[in-house]
Image 1: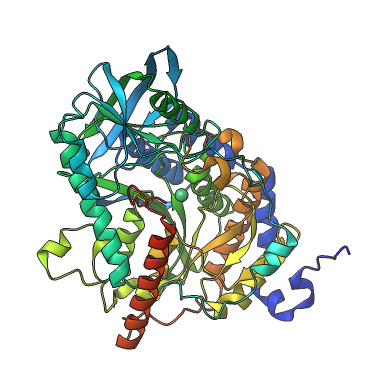
Image 2 (image 1 turned 135 degrees about the vertical axis):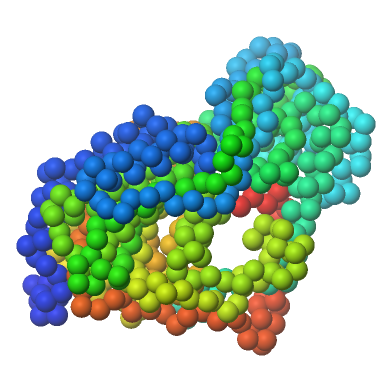
Length: 559
Ligand SMILES: [Zn+2]
């Protein structure tokens, strides 16, 4: 049955009062007929290119976005600094099969690993270790070798649909509340989780020391996507923790070829030539910030953003150039329309997202709410994800009560089909109303569910309303996420225009509404009983995982 989409505003007197319809028309006109969103994205991707956190290109992107926002009339522009660590960049990398026959292979260096300092040649060897005790068997055998990091897995025929838009059925399912779901902001640490993370951390430290001592020439990782896609990641960016040997990720098909040669005792030889550099002149990285100042409620703030940093494999068009371009386009539209919002509209283009939400966490910590750090200096020196507690109680700062909402876009470049409320059901009526003037463009599904893995979490974790829109997945997860083909070719212009128009509409309505968006209660430490139950649950999960034999060579924090 064909369903008629009746705009909510036509039938609801509440909505009639909520949405500024003249403004909605102006936003649509500017966003659809005077759009600059692809122009912005093209500059970020084709001109600037990959934007690895703290790399020279990321700094270039910071300066360009700041200037662009200022040219559009935004005020109070600044680059907000936070502590990060070493910068890294790679100019070129080649990996060649030099024997028993010649062939160019396709690989991209692991971020924050050293270059080869000229061509390095070596015999390939399988190196399959999962625990510290596995290392001993390789002592004295690895000098000058190039190691395959882990056994080969069979490449299965693809089972998933590559490109997808959400069906009415899927959107309908997203409306269901799951009473058992853990609240999104309950980022509790459990003993079992911490134990397994500590184990991986210690293993990685032992592995680094071992590879260096054994004078390994280089290591090779298998891409986590098949079909020629090289999907990248990084090693530690902290000073004093740098991975000691050149490391490169290659296509699954190339990796399989090398393992088959090893199985047949046809000793493969490789030439590696990786040019990579560390940048240690500035241990900080920067978020780009700018504002459309508010009028009578100017101390109150509505925020929008995406992450400006990307991985180094490609231009970071979908992850997350698209989110940045949409956030920038939304404020450009509003600035062009010369809006005079009651609340200040602030854009934040984060850095360090891919390594663990560094930029947005630092910003929230500095301006909205802070959390106590571990008292034990040894624990404090560990990465944050290894701390025994996220830090209780949350200590709100003066601006905590001034933020109405933060809207983030980082689920690829697909159009907006609705919004996840992160369990903040009370926000539903306002959010529904704001979709009203755009109901021909979006189903406007309001989901009670949570979605994780990106910068809205930094807000949600301390009880501030931070949302992600529900987006059509397109081919984000199947092909583009952190791979070497994340280029502007895979971005659909109409989807970005739609997202920009809705984002601008939401920002305007949030900035003009009589009230701020409702909030969830401020998160508090788990009770003793709750903590015990969580510990039991995670311990059970851990044992099940062990039984299933799902062992990962390394635990990487990837977003
Ligand atoms: Zn992302």
